[in-house]
Length: 251
Image (cartoon, helix red, strand yellow):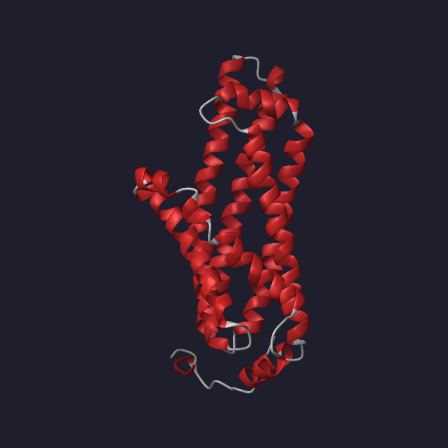
């Protein structure tokens, strides 16, 4: 699709779509990661975790489905954000979109591990060679592996949001403070992902404070786009720029 074709889309409509799908993603992600897992997973206790999953299968399924909705929301979010910001800097906007989509792909594959605990515990009778304690351990290990995959995706999401924060700050068709807040949220994700692997003891001291900037950074940005959109006149001022080559896209 050519630049002229992309410019036929209303920037206000595109911005509001990004805001709405982002809010849906925040809500569904918070439901699964923030509520369902905290309610079902007992740290260091595989037996209690397995019991909770079996006793609350409907809640587990709702949380899993909500997480899938989050991933579905990420795709239009990333693609439309690229359309909105490509005139500010097409290279950075493209890298940001790529990081966001890679993070989404990693998290999507990671959802296979998320479903294993319910599958193993509910189908335990078909796995007669394993003792109940072994099934509980496998389920718990699968949940922990999903956490590892989530942390890997955080590295890509963090870079995505830091780059998006720069684009917002430079664009002037959105308040610069939103770019700063989103950049801080991205830095939090990025730092959480890397410190979890490089310095887990440091990460344990930083958590949960490290992720405090994420909700205001992502939430305020999504709310602004959903309600206010972008400054259309300033967006079209960027759209009037016709880059001739790669060197004109990077400053």
